[in-house]
Length: 239
Image 1 (spheres, helix red, strand yellow):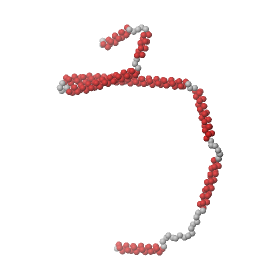
Image 2: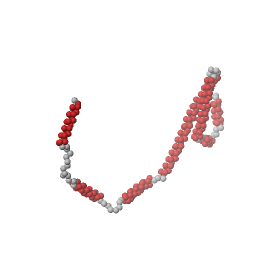
Image 3: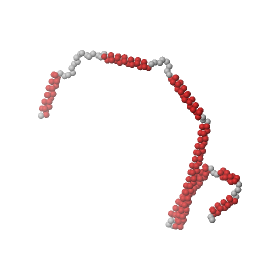
Image 4: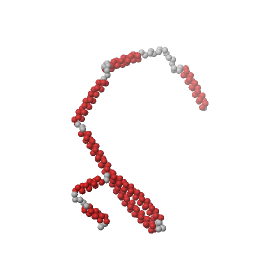
């Protein structure tokens, strides 16, 4: 039988012998356990402290592994026994490092679960608090009073609209807009007729005969003779 099983056997026998028969003792112990149970935040802080400790242990093991590798390289050809011992120590350190990695993963998972549970508990607590507040507000509201209040608001809005319409009406003389438009059309027609009369009074055409701008027959004949003379000179020069 192992030492652990013996220890559990002894602890179970001692607890059975010292167990009281009355139910009051068990209830007092359960109350004591509930009072002594740690809070989620305390458990999270403990887990973070454990994570920090294991992280430091990781760094120490990694540095030791590097040292043992350097020792094995240094004594590889000179002292094989020392090199083998260094490699054995390196293997043990690597095994410890692997175990710490697994432990850290478990602790991280447990810490995340505790943090999520704490957050969910706080959220549910606040939601319940808000629900109670809404319920308390609704208890002080009468639906019949709401209907009458909305009817009063509608009536007051109609009264306010009537007041605004009355205030916005202009004071003084009131004119018929159709009559004003008809008068404006008459004025425009008179203006058009006046313009047509002014257009009929055009200036008279002058009777003085203007000098003709066409060249005379004599000047044209003289110009033609000069051109023929120049052409003859050009033909003689070319031949």
